[in-house]
Amino acid sequence: MKKHVLFILFFMVAFACFAQKDSISNVLEEVVVVGNKKIAPKKIRVKSIKIGIKQQVKNPINFTNLLRYNSPISFRDYGNGGVSTARFRGTSASNTLVLWNGIPINSVGSGQTDFNALSANISDIVIVQSGGNSTDFGSGAIGGTVHLNDEINFKKHQKIHIFSSFGSFNTSSNFFKSAFADKKWSVKLASTFNYSDNNYTFIDKRYKDENGHLLKNKNGNYKNYGVNFNIAHQFNSKNKLAFYTTKYYGNRLFSDGLPNPSAGSERNEDFNQRNLLQWKYNFSAFKQRLSIAYLTQEYRYYGTKNATDFSFGKSQTTHINYNLTYRASNILSFNYKTVFENITGKNLANNSENNSKIIKKRNSIAFIGSVKYQPIKKVKTSLQLRKELNSDFNVPVSVFVAGEYKIASKVNFSANFSTNYRVPTYNEMYWPIVGNLHLVAENSVQGEAGVSFKNKNIELKSTAFYIHINDKILWLPAGNSNLWRPKNVNDVVHKGIESFISFQKKIAEHRFAISSNYTFTTAENIENNKILPYAPKHLWNFTADYSYKKISVFLQSLYQSKVYTNEINLDFYALKKVNVQNIGLNFNLSTTKINLPTIGVTVNNIFNKVYYFSNLRPMPGTNFNINYKF
Image (cartoon, rainbow, N blue to C red; front, side):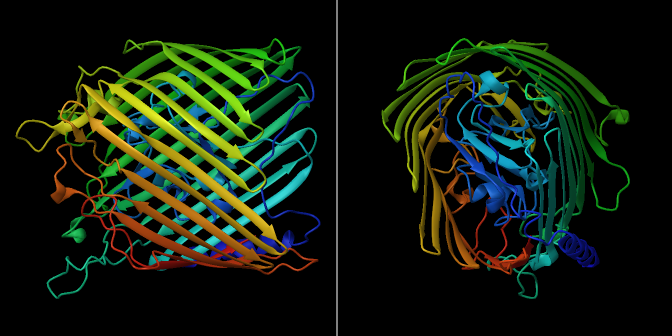
């Protein structure tokens, strides 16, 4: 509580310094820069959703909740605040690729991303893109990609945004963003601090202690910090240099599942550092971009929270990307990229023989070429090829072919075909005892076709998709033991429909807005005709907003159908459907002369539903937070 009070005092000081409305805006807006010279063919539309600060403040607790209520992604979390992994279109967590300013940041060890260990609130914009894109981003982009982007703007401005919330279970989420720029320099600084005792009551009445009382989540508290700094210099309109850096520290205790949550005593620490130097230079009809990134990841696992000995995994990644675009005309452009990546991974298990370290290295270089052609005004086409040379695996050529046809002034039809891949991760190959050196890379063939409509008030996108993955890697029980081991299975198929709709309308001082995502998916292992684990058939969310003058209210809803949790589809272990709603109310204290903060309250799980996203790890009942935005 003391830390929270100090944070509030800091915010109040910042508010006193920046309260004048004519000197600062309280919203960090998305900026789009459009050139006025020769225009290259426009990019073919793909299924993507942008999530900005308006959505971030509605779900500030963690990145998982933000995406769960605002995107078509399903999540598996080990209880509130626990490890959380994402799945597009029924694929696996390692088929979901996360990128920071265009650089892949999935764990080198697991190939996955823990979305509760990412500080998304300090990024300017989050873009969720469904569908395979290995030709652009490489291994792991079979299901879809999530982009955390920082935007550089050389238009003179000075902006501050501050958010702080405090609520149930001594949970606090806080972030601060600032941006300053003129014609030559652009500087951004952002930070976040979050913590929680996370000691919520398990409202599932089937589980009680010896005295007949409901159980509580024990040993589940967490805290994390994040900082983000960007600086860029514009030598002239054609020559720009930018540096991005971000750092994250997380400390979590891991509770045990039902029926004895108090048995848990494990602890985990995460240390992540990302640095990126980017140079952009344009000349004649050419645009070039050179990106050099250095990333480090480290986790430390403690068998008990008070232990001093730990197992760890650590990696260093060097990523170099050179991108050259040539605009031959307004209807034809070419692009060439070379991507080099060097990865060094280390791990040490306390129970391994002599506590010896395992050190592995992997190098890859990829060559990507693409062409965009717009033969007539209503038609756009795109072709992209990628060939990667990998020190550990034979990676096939990846292909992406797309087309778009403008049916009417506001209606477009688009379709694409692609081949994608995922190479086995370090854990899958080298994990002590269960690692499998005989794994081969996953390969996928997929296609999708969709229709989009957009006017002043309505936006609609609907896409039918089909994904066929060969040599899918699954962790399966190893014989009669309690061990699980990765292996390649024959084929899996994912097919379905993904839709998005948004509507907004202003009548006098009344504003209405609604947005919704719906996904229908069947994900099946062809080898045994069973549904894949944690692949919901139906996934639906929506957010409805209403505002009048200084008052605004929002309602969120999430529905997820039953999911199986094992490969043989036992109903006994299946998770029941989820149907949860949240509501929030905000009041803006600003006057016509002074920009003041907005005070809000949010109530989550308003009907106190029992629900799970992982077996024996229930989520919280009704809970609330009070928040401050400026």
